Image (tube, rainbow, N blue to C red; front, side):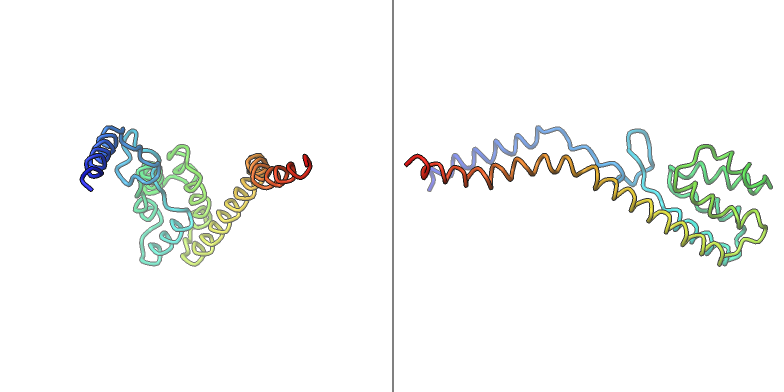
Length: 186
């Protein structure tokens, strides 16, 4: 028993040293919930449908639309754009001018801006109308995700076929042919 214990302990120490010397594993993008500093990767964002629902809840509570947009400036990626748009709206700038000051918007914020456009330009921001817009935004996002999944399925046919066909030949056809070879040689 002791003759086997020494090599096993040596192997465990060698494995521990190898693990200690490995470089640190890189973090997956999107999982870092930090401040969004340099090298931190993309930050998660709240979907446009949720932003519209939150805005509707704030309108129900009596908050003006400009303040609601400014309050929702949560994530580091969205903060600058939503703060700029909210500041422009509080100053009394027209809707399009205030959002133009926000610069280039990510897709989810562009959906949010479009969903709020009617409520802001009509002068009667209705929470009920915003909730209906939120449902439309979620349906549009769902359709975009479905199209992306369909496109991915089409693009994966060739690589999966090229991987599966050789495996089928090696594990299915070749053993059968090799099993028939001794019969043929007799």
